[in-house]
Length: 338
Image 1 (cartoon, rainbow, N blue to C red):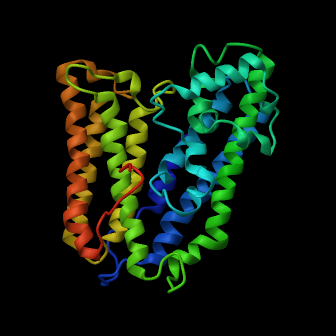
Image 2 (spheres, rainbow, N blue to C red):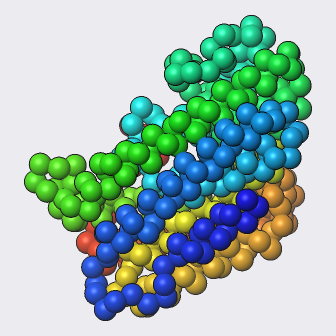
């Protein structure tokens, strides 16, 4: 499972040359970009639930490995925040972050302290606070020195199993909706459908690219950067499990795949985007700082800022060149607020 996502991303990467056709292949994007990512999420989440059923100790290697594989799969799909991921707040149920008010540790602490029967599982767990669901809640139970040891060990074990089962059920529901309904809605726009034209379908995919890049630049990198006077390394995503930089790398690779598919028929644009994504990844790898702890030192902080600038350069190319190329614009997204 260790190299599962890397192999998956390479397998799903677009070939270097497309047919000489200026229109992006919507059906190909659905079949080769979207569906494989949600299939991988469902598969690895089921493996995670199975691993927890076998061994629920926080430091169990098999459980932590399964957690990493499933979390990787979510990050690779997390830019696709439309359709089935938005039903019943499923995306937030899988990934409630940023948690600026510290709701997740607080709710988990209350559940453990009271040994709330809701942790016994079943459909009732979906009624708990969304802060106690998903990958970030599970990270606290597996990696946080306090929450991974507090209270009754048997209850914590039950809670881990319940959360992993909830993750698996959510991922399976997303995949089922894509396979049975939403894929066809995106492939075949019609006057009375969710997407009335192919242009509207392309708009949705383009927005997934721009939103994914914005979240990486402003949140995954921006939160730990804070300000020069007050850096915030403790706000880095998934820092307890050492995954902060990994999430940036996985998201960039996945968003690149979609961007290049949308840029089909324009070799110069594809080359430009490919070079920009490669530059960002190279700078991230050279940083060699898995949780962005280096933002506290001026010289190394600059390296993180340069990575952020690299992502913003990609955003500019996507906005200025890719959007006009396919005849769409970014519009509003879930990150824009009211």
